[in-house]
Image (cartoon, rainbow, N blue to C red; front, side):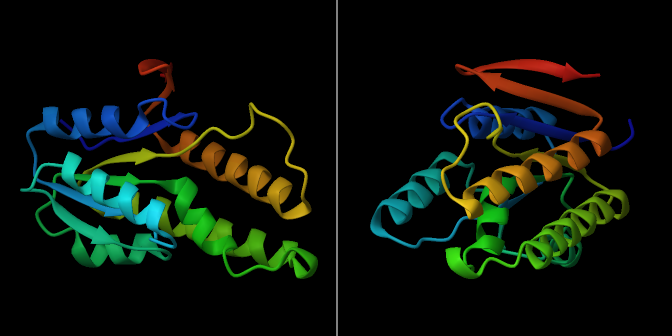
Length: 182
């Protein structure tokens, strides 16, 4: 069986991570879990710790906040599955240095697209299945701030690029996976 790439999207608390982990476990292959979250406050520290506890202890872990494609290539080793959780926080890490009044849209777009291009290249080169978790943020309210709208737009484009590359795409709704590709 050839390697495949699965993209899982959906809203907050829709069951994306749980479903991704179930797919990884069912594969029976060694897993490299790529965590993109940063613990900026106590609540996020608690969430990260809960997430760690929910994963099988035998999985390898890579904490990477940016340039995840090159870091995965260095660490993939014998992994048969690379689970990236999540693209949404990866983009948040890129955006985190911005100040609302001084947003450089062109630079942010360039950085985001370079990150996605690097990840897609990694998917093509690494001999493993990939499971990528992301949020679908385009179904809600229009963000009130310029940087919020730019974030929503660039995440939407990033999701489209990964969905084009992915062999399978699921959207999670109320804990239920709905296959939308193929």
